Length: 144
Image 1 (cartoon, helix red, strand yellow):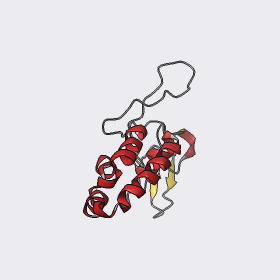
Image 2 (cartoon, rainbow, N blue to C red):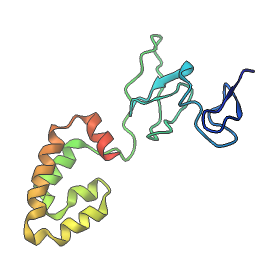
Image 3 (spheres, helix red, strand yellow):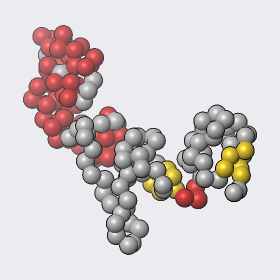
């Protein structure tokens, strides 16, 4: 069994370890020998992990013989860019899009100031901005 030093605390760690037993530093994230890009956030992670430690999305192994990664299946709770944009444009004055994105604090602020029409204008701008984003950028920006 090959041993290496933890880059964080210097303790000897097995080459198959996912994290340092001393400090908990994620060794597999720094070990490029057996790493692949996460199917969701595209960061390098250990190929044997079933869930990305950075974004929490389950990784799906390809059943095909050509090692090309499958597209990830929709994860429960994943929000739609189109629905977010529609809610922001149509009901942005009430902050409905913030509640949909699970940001109730911003939603309540929009609801409290809806009589000024400022949240409605901001909702229109927000909705147009979301419509022009790619799906990957949307999910990375809002972590949904």
